[in-house]
Length: 79
Image (cartoon, rainbow, N blue to C red; front, side, top):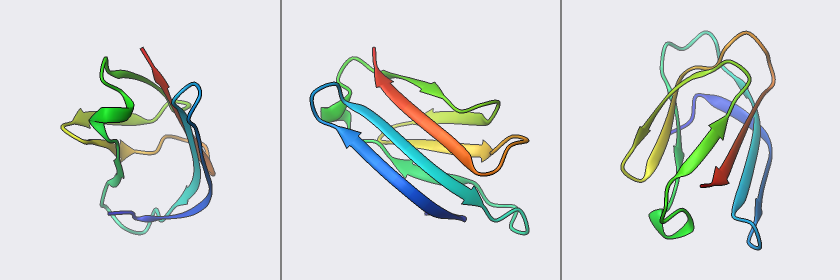
């Protein structure tokens, strides 16, 4: 589920780095959920998000609060 408008998404298969840039819809009090396949990150992943508040769930990254900056850039990197 997304409560945002994505502007770009990129996955680098060589490094498993995933970058998503989006503008959250701040009128909705709903999280943004990003599907994260376990096969892409078998050892887990690190999240960079510029001050967002997030939760890692099985198969998903949930952005509960996008933080103060818009658009938001989320970067996942393999551990």
